Structure formats: structure tokens, C-alpha cells
Image (cartoon, rainbow, N blue to C red):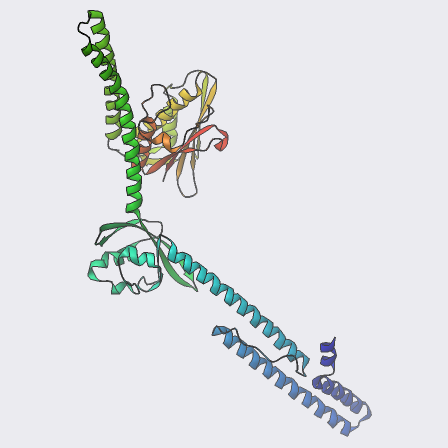
Amino acid sequence: MVCKFRYFLSPTFLSYTIGVVGCTYACLGQDWKCLAGGILLLSGAGFLSVRRLRRLRESLDLIMEAVENGDNTFRLPSGHLRNASVELFNAAANRMGNFLSEEKLALEVREKYYEVILEHVSTGVVVLDGDCDRVVLRNETALRLLNVPRLALLSQLPEDKQDIRDCFKTLQPGENELLAVHTRQGVRQLMVKVVILVRDEVPLRVFTLNDVRNILDEHEMDAWVKLTRVLVHEIVNGMTPVCSLSSSMLEKTSLSAEQLHDGLAAIHATSQGLLAFVENYRRFTSLPKPCPDIFYVKDLLNEVGSLQLLPPHIRLTVRILPDDVMVYADRHLIRQVLINLLCNAVQAIGEKPGRIDMTSELTENEHVLIYVSNDGPAIQEDAEQLFVPFYTTKQGGSGIGLSVSRQIMLQSNGSITLLPSGTRGWNTVFLLDFA
């Protein structure tokens, strides 16, 4: 109310009011002196209005210049001005300045937070400008992985680091490239990926670097430990009865023909089991080289479904969405994977009535998915354990079916996964993913 009252009593408003009244009275009474006074008052009011607008424009220019320069500390005088409109403008401008200062401070805190995170991650990050030469941002992990003391311009890299520059210049979004970096400790293998971002209408190329050697070594060692454990277990189980029988036979001074026959028969049976185990190992380690070709998923699923692998009490359904999905892989090897999954499903269902479903779908990113599902008992074991060579929970099982299937899918640039029980409404679901 105080501001409104002061606004109505401002000199400009009073000059306008008296001038209009005086001019009107002068025109009605033909009082030329009064008319001259009214015109003078109107001229004065106009001058005051122009001067006020000029001051407002100067204040606005000052504010815009400060904002453009990143200075949010500007403050305009307020609280003691006679002109209420100017005071209101200055107060609003000061509020905006306070808000911008708080936002700038919050932004600086967030940037510092992100910088700390960026410096402590195990992934190297390098950001280049549009011409792929000037380094806008990089963390210490990137310098360590690339084995360079500093990185400001790619063109300043030494001759022995030109493969780094070539990789950064030629790599496209969606592609991966293995970059070999020579260090005193040997060759370091880096997986390089890139995405393009736009900031202030300027394209930026953001590269991520990951040392895959240690990860691969850990997985390889873990796989060898698991395989060695299984091999030792099978060999010990096979050789224990052979050693026991042979030792018993050697301790006896005389053996009847029947005892000799029974002992040799047991040794023969155990030896046959070891030979079968060795044959399974040979099958696992000597898969045929894939011969990829393009084929329709519909034809393959229908072909597998017509092989009469299922007993009468198990019903098979096949669905392909869309109908013309194609895959580039070795048709015969993928058929073997599907047959293996169907046989496993039949064994899991057992003698009870059951259902098996094979469904193919095409994702938005052009991945072909094949789901092989059944309503038998859900698998309780760890999903990854099922793919360990020679690991089996079935009586008389070889334990190489799923491991061979995973090996085939890897050779086909795909993957096989056991999804959690209940996925898509089924107890057991295996997913084949073709990239």
C-alpha cells in the first residue's frame, strides 16, 4: 500500500494530472495562460518519464552485461528511492541477482562433486572438441591408462602414441575398439567407446577407456579353477574304484575265474566311464568352426519343432514376431543349441503333462531374441554354475550341454542366459540374444 500511495503521488503523475486538468480548463474557458502552464507541466512530466526510462534502460543494460560476464553479484539501490516504479524494478532485479548467485553456487558445488567422482573411478574419460584435437576434459585415470604425463592436444602426442590419436579420430559412436598401449609392464589392452554430446551448440566426443586385461585375466583364471576342480573330481571318482579293485586283486594269492572276471569287468566299466568323460571333454574343446549365413528364424524353429523330440504328454508352441526375422549365424550350430534346450526341458518336466514354448522377438535396437521356456520345476542352482563345463545335477548327465551352447552363442556374436524364475510367466526361461 505504501508503494502504491507513493506511486500515485509521484511528481510525474502529479504533473500529468495537473497538466491535463489545466489544458482542459484552458480550452473550455479560453484561458491561454492556463493553457501554457498546462503544456509546461505536461512537457515536464514527459521529460521525467523519458529520464526514468533511460535510467531503467541503463540499469537493465548493466544487469545484462553482468549476466553475460558471469557476474551475479550486481545489486541496484533500493529501499530509499522516491520513485516507486524504479524501486520496484530494482528490488526485482536484486531478487533475480540473489537467485542467480545461489544457482551458480549450487552449480559449482555439483561440478566439484562430479570432478571428485570422475577422478576416483576406474574408467578413463577423455572429452574432445568437435575437431578431435583439443582435450576439453580428462581424468587422471585416462592419463595412467594411456601412459602419458599430460594430454591437452592430440596433435602433441609423440610418434609412438599416434595410434591413440588415430583411434580417437576414427572411432564412431556405437563401435568398440581395442587399443594396445605399450608400457614398461607390457602391453595394456584398452576397450575404447565414444558418444557424442552437444554443449552450447558445440559437438563434444566423450571417450571412455577401460583396461580389459585384468578383467579377462580374472575371468580366465576363475574359469580354469572351476574346470580343474571338475576334472580332478571326475578323474578321482573314476580312478578310485580301479585302484581299489586292482589292490584287492593283487593282495590275494589266488583268484578264481569268476573273481577275476568280476574284477576285470568292474575295471572295464570304470575305464569306459573315464573314456566317455574324455570324449565329452574333446567335444567341448573342439567345436567345429562356424559357417555363418543368413536364415529365417521361423524356418529354424519350425524345423526343430518337427523333429519329434517331445513325448505325447508335452505340448510345444512356436511363435515368431515378426514373421520374417532373420539371423546371421551357423544354422546347424544354433539348431544344436535349441535341440539341447528342448531335451533339457523334457528331462525337467519328466512324466507329468507339461508345456514348452519357443518365442522369437525383434527388439528396437535390432536384436533378435529367442525365448525357450517350460513349466517344469524351476532351476534352483546358481545360473552361472549351469554353464560351467562338466557341472551337472542330473543323474548320468555329461555337464557339457549348456557350456557348449554358450560357446556356440559366443562364436555367433550372441549370448545365452537363464532368466529368473517367473519371467514371462514360466518357471524356466533360457534367452538366446543375437546382436
